[in-house]
Length: 508
Image (cartoon, rainbow, N blue to C red; front, side, top):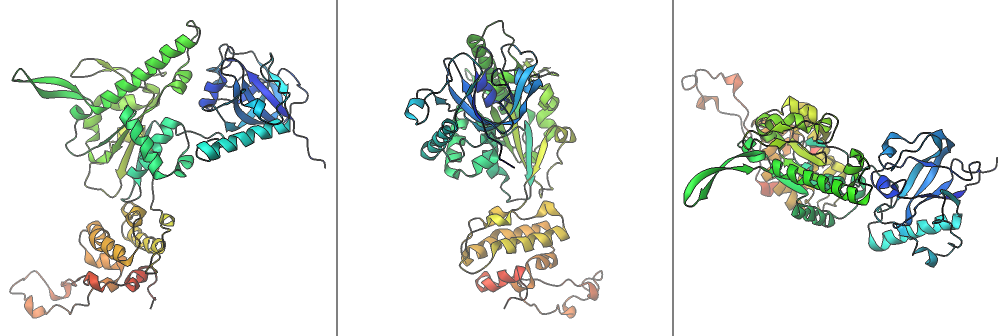
């Protein structure tokens, strides 16, 4: 059976009809109108997505998923049409390279071999292209990636981070706070977490701090005394002309909401200038063009959730945000001003599942947040240990026993071990952090600590002399119930063999 021939096409749009760049930015391009070569356009063909006009250039490469058929534009695409077209012949597309943020302009094309003739720019919708032209664009994309940007800058279209309200939960040391940087950048830069994960931590932190300086990202930590007055607004003492008076001070949540809402309004004003003022600007287009804002709340469950959020809990839901179908506006208690939560504000919280001393998270808030569980990842411990200890196996063994004796909320995260390189590092980690943490988990029941880490870390103490604990001295204490005593060996005596026996008890 002969292989089906692949055809190559230019699909062209104009901003007077369809906002291709904005639609690609919002990942809303699903189909394309077919006006010419109707019988030849078929499944598997390759497409150059071109925008004509002042912003002329290639904004993407795509593959046709199914032969054209008569259909209406999809709902997600309608926001980017100046006037929704009637039902017509359309091809379904898969976007392979999304170049909305860095198109290949027509000025570049003359220097690319094989681009004569190239029919884009003349009136029309669908034109023939060549394999050489399509491949040349792929080469340009890859060349730009290697020279100027991370190698995934033009990966196939990716789903940006979509959560509005998210809590990263897990045991201590699993990188919850560490990962908030990636999640925040995913929101603002509309890039996938996988894509960001291959960048250096230094670059990620640098951009994160830039967004913080611009006011797009704020980071706070909840604690037991944190209040509504700190978070939203409240009366605070101030000095005026030597007199102590009380004024209304905005909290972090109110300030970032106002900033995000102002950005939405600025976007609306800009769109009205760019387009026909009489055109109805959709909420989808507004959100696609608005800068995103992120509020990170570390240790969110350490605060009194109901008291801190107050009446604003209901306003966090997606459809209750400003501009949405069920938008709610409330009146703030101190300033008596109307207040709503903008749709371009994202909340990211972190929650330590082992911290049982905090108030359980409010059920009303739990219903409005999505939760991502972050487990320990022993596979990340790839560093070589000079003492021959296998850190992944060691962590797996510890956590298996802890989960059996307690539950997975009390596991130990991989982050504790990330910096361990030598036996000295490991001894210091166990003596100052791991063993005290496990002892706290079991409320200083050292028999269970022994079960987790092994008898090899403890001295063999002689039995208690029952004569020293007589019934006269302690009539309530019977000899058979005398507790076994436990004492850690001096840390100077700990060897690599002790640590290996945590996961291999027969090691000699």
